[in-house]
Image (cartoon, rainbow, N blue to C red):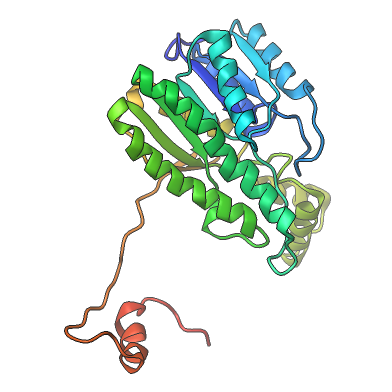
Length: 307
């Protein structure tokens, strides 16, 4: 085990499986003490089980580390407070918070129910807030802390994920503002857009779509389909852990309010949104006739018109 996080206390939500588990194990490997939070639900959020969180705690203890489980849901304010309180009660403080918990309820927007929308917003966006708010109270008092939130490339737009996309892109805006709120107290807040083949992404429906895509390219042999599949999903949960650990260290104290992309061994750094073109007019407001001419010729000239 390393010691670059020795003496630090970390909470990782949704760390019973997948990306969260990989992040927790990597933090523990650098000496952090862990709260392993996981409700133990299915990939769609249904059900619950204490087994996943308990098993990860045992893995960390076998590594020579310290970890305690927590089974609260991040979707409620009480759950978020209890998660952070678990760290305070067990270890006396909280230095690192990784907001990772979540699940999927995919549906095309014209078929999406209010419950499917609310469930995703609650666990991802509300869940990030519910844990961050109580954590920042302690971090502000101790004038130090690291918060790493989990966004997604789906936030940039993804078929059938209006609820998930909205929640994840909301987390990016939340990250930027928390970074500003907490900067004077020595607390950083960043986000990652991870990629990984997990039980959330590797559904039977997705596998079927991939098989059809392979067949459309003339790939029909089972071994070739497997190779095609592995190429598309080369990123594993473990690929996302190193940058999270780095952002949790003192070495990353100068990075805050930023977003990182991970895909296998590629780590990307996003620039902040910026205006790339603009049109200006003196005098009265723009008329529609003027915009019909100026938008395609100047403001959006880089866009390709449909045939």
